[in-house]
Every structure is written in structure tokens, then in C-alpha cells.
Length: 321
Ligand code: HEM
Ligand code: HEM
Figure 1: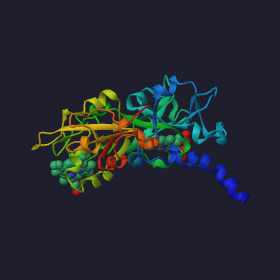
Figure 2 (figure 1 turned 30 degrees about the horizontal axis):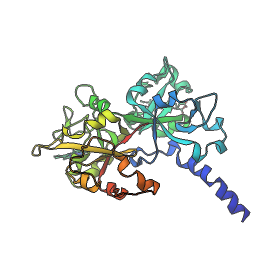
Figure 3 (figure 1 turned 90 degrees about the vertical axis):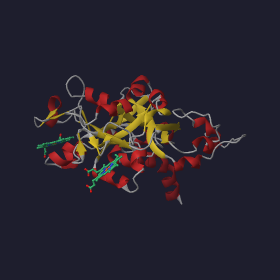
């Protein structure tokens, strides 16, 4: 009995500590149930610390801590905030010269600044800190991913739609695409011609398009997941059903996205207004969290939508704090 009680007491601590470990993070399985904390917000908030990329609300004299530097008992569920998220542009400034050196592999950013093999942010004369190196470590290095056990996680890698657009596969640019909220590196695909895959240009969010081809989603396992797609109010507003055209030869259709909680959904060509109990004039490109809020608080006085309706829409990205 005593044993069970002790176990129960420690369960919340253990679960947060074990569950939210960036070493086990699989970017393709991220559901949006954990908050992404932008680097900017993190640095502005005095009481936030990052323990190997996991943000907690704790007052300490250091912002960045390793797991060895903090008592695990302090890392309780009520102090847990989310995951530290760096954009691809922020990552590139951590090149090991003026700042510490960071590298990204499969959506996880690692700190290589304590490694003698990465002095001044340069590795084996050919790899630089500040870069996304998934393909390089998996396919070009002699050692593969296992060397990452020697360095500490620092955060997760995210892209805004504008940043994604720069990776259009033209000239020397890498070819990145996004589907279901995950950004993939498609640069190595033999199907690409001048940055396009059968007319679908890299640099784009292509969830709606790939769903038009049943079964084709499985193809995503052949390319490299490298990060998450994140939206702020402004980038979400562009997906208002009038501005962003679906890539298609036959359809004259524009994408509609909405945000609920931390998740952005594609509601293009669906009767989403009706499902959310909104009038037909409701606009996409906006945050509709309030349509569901009383559901989560159990205090509904009027006709709110059932949160389950969201399961019918594809996830296309995430919000960021
Ligand atoms: C052609 C490419 C590469 C070569 C030839 C190479 C070679 C090496 C060698 C010889 C070591 C030392 C192994 C040892 O101590 O047993 C090493 C360590 C390491 N490499 Fe690479 N590497 C390459 C690419 C990469 C890439 C792309 C990454 C990206 C993240 C990476 C991350 C690391 C890390 C984290 C270590 C451990 C450093 C430490 O022990 O402090 N390597 N690499
Ligand atoms: C008319 C539309 C499309 C056609 C005709 C098409 C056709 C193909 C073909 C023929 C392959 C190669 C299959 C093989 O090697 O066995 C392929 C692979 C692939 N497709 Fe598509 N595709 C289309 C749309 C899309 C869209 C919208 C995406 C969204 C991202 C996508 C993502 C992929 C990926 C990731 C692969 C694997 C690439 C590789 O193995 O190098 N496709 N597609």
C-alpha cells in the first residue's frame, strides 16, 4: 500500500519528465497538445527557464539549464509551460561564432557548443552550426544519429509560412514542403524539376493537395521531417478563402484555415461554419477557440460546437506563444 502511494505521488513528476524529453521527440507525431514557446517570449519572461528545451516556470539565476543542473522534483506539471521553439532564422544566428553553436536534426535543435569537434561552429571542415542537418547526419556522416547522444537538446525547429516559401528548390535553395503541420526536406527527391514535383512547387503548404491523391500521404515517409509549421495572426489571416490558391490545374479554389487552441486546421471546401455553429458569413483565417471554450470549461450556457468536429479537419500547423 505504502509503495503504491509513493508511486502515485511521484507519477506526475515522472510523467512530465519522461514524456517531455526532446531526446524522444518525433516531429511527425506532434499533436499540438503541448505549447510551443517562441524564443522571443522565452527570453522576455523572467520566470521561464529551459531545461534542455523544455520550458518551466521557475525562478533561477540561469535561463538555460541541463537536466543534471536541476532537481527533477522541481519540474512538476504545474510549472510546465511547453517546448522552446526556434525559427529557422533564429537557428541560423547560432553559428558558434558570436553566439553558441546549434544544429537541427529531425526537428530537434541540439547545442554543440561544448563539443571540441565543433570548435567555432565548424565540424570536420564541412558542416556549420546554425544549420538544418538532417540529411547530412543521416546520409553523409560516417556516424549517423547516434552521435547526438553526446550533445544536449536545446529546442524544436519551426518555420513560418514566409520562411518556408524561401526553400523553393530553385537554384541552390533547398526544397522544403509542409503537410499536416510538419515541414519536410524534399531536396533529395529525384522527382523534383526546378523545385516542382509534378507541378507542385516546393516552399508551400501542400496538405490539401496531397489529400486529393488517396494513399499518396504515405510518400511523406520517404522524405526528411525537419520541423513544424507555425502561424501567427498575420500569416493565418492570409488563409481566408480568398487569397491562397490551391495548387491545381482544374480547380479554382482558395485555402481556408482556422485556428482552435494551439492547432491550425484546413477547412477548405467543408461546411465548417455550420459545424462550428457559426453563421455562413463567418470568415476563415481567424482564431475560433472561443467557439469551444465553454466545452473545455464545462460551463456551456448556449449552443457551442462539439470539439470532436475538429477531428474531421486536417491539421496544417500550430500556434506559437
Ligand atoms: C561528412 C560528414 C561528417 C563527418 C565525416 C563526421 C565525422 C565525425 C567524427 C570523426 C566524429 C568523432 C567521433 C568520435 O569521437 O568517435 C564526429 C562526432 C560528432 N559529429 Fe560528426 N561528422 C559528419 C557530419 C555530422 C553532422 C551533419 C552532424 C550534425 C549534427 C554531426 C554531429 C556530430 C556530433 C554531435 C559529434 C559528437 C561530438 C562530440 O563527441 O563532442 N556530424 N563526427
Ligand atoms: C498530381 C499530383 C501528383 C503526382 C502525379 C505525383 C506523383 C508522384 C510519383 C510518380 C512519385 C514517385 C513514386 C515512386 O517513386 O514510386 C511521387 C512521390 C512523392 N510524392 Fe507525389 N505526386 C503528386 C502530388 C504530390 C503532392 C501534392 C505532394 C505533397 C507534398 C507529393 C509528395 C510526394 C513525395 C514526398 C514523394 C516521395 C518522393 C521521393 O521518394 O523522392 N506528391 N509522387
